[in-house]
Image 1 (cartoon, rainbow, N blue to C red):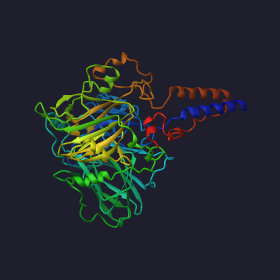
Image 2: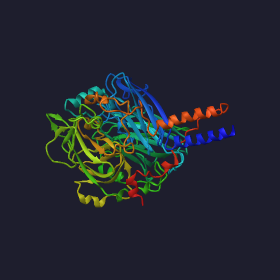
Image 3: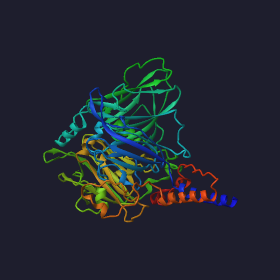
Length: 603
């Protein structure tokens, strides 16, 4: 019997090593998306709720976790959920925008399978179709560091999420009708903080302790500024990058952006005003919340602290002060500064200029004179099933043309493992905010005037911030360096939702000729088909599993089951316990050999 136990022990050891090597924990979410009455600005509106909540449930995760999100669409119209900042490594199938996914029909369910691979930080999810975002349906995403990875600040006493942004009293269908009629949106009616209007939130703190606030601008049209009466804001994280820990009186957060600050409750025990206000608007909207000391001796007193309003230079200088903490670890133990982004040769330069043309008598927005229109079939599916006539590579030039604007389903080509310089050029009088799905990029420069190649001499090639959403000031440019390290069809869009809806977006097809899981996961079996992709499932074989889980091998699962049966037969008196799953393994704590760009840049 001892020999049998030895065989069992060796077998279980082998199975444990095989099943945990590269395996990460799973978190399961069941969401029911419905309409419901909400009153964020004191007026009854039809909001989009998730499990009856507005904002929706927060997603809590740890680096490399697998997130299984089952979404039931109880609305009377199609729905998609997108994950702002989640990179979807090798997995644009789950990105949740119309260029990659067919919408979830009313009364049906779809399960998203995500992995927050090699990520930390603060993000949010939102409904991406039409103007659903104007009705709610958004929520926060936290990705914590693994326990073994050092974080460059002590654990805070609490961790709060602030989802703030402008809001309209009109229902989302009315706002969509305005845009469809060829007009821009009116000025918003107010600002919300976590789905509530002014004085609708209280955050309780203990005197002498430090707290983390994760702040996202989930609005539709305006930049915002955040400040707390009598308190300093210590910036510690910007969209997954640990920043230099500079102290600020207030911070600008542009559309779609997220960041984290530490706030120490070091003032006399009373209540203090937390303030969000709009930036670069002729009319200033303000919304407040309360920072409540648990031993408070008094209520809020004094005037609402003032903040910046229309000052561009102030905001520009603040943005330039956001730097990477080179010695801090990111999602892996190696220092963030070990990636020398400034030493990698650029293989592709893209200059993207926004504009506001009138086309066919209607207001549109464009990139390099092309105003994007959705195709009848998601671009990712058309590409996979080789459906002709849906889009054409090169349908948008990689630099401004100066010609007349026109409507087109614009897709730009890029090669996997390339290294792109993207220059966002803004000749308009309003601040722009740009987001790129599937990637983070390094903000190497921003300045006023016209960009020229000479501007490269002033790029920050050492310690700039890495993020996924960046602002471009009026009559200005912003340049970023971006590793093309994620195969897929990726949305590049304005985070001003009216501009995005009316054409200020495009798709970047990052292509690898290798048909390999190493570069991209295969199409999931549960992929929804629509448009010209209907019927394609029978023409091209899809993977056998109903839902594919990243980094899970059916062989490993079956081998474990066989091992259990063998050991049970060898010693039926010995109870078997499944070994507990552990967090990411040591092999993931060093740079992957497939990350060739990293290998190029690590000194």
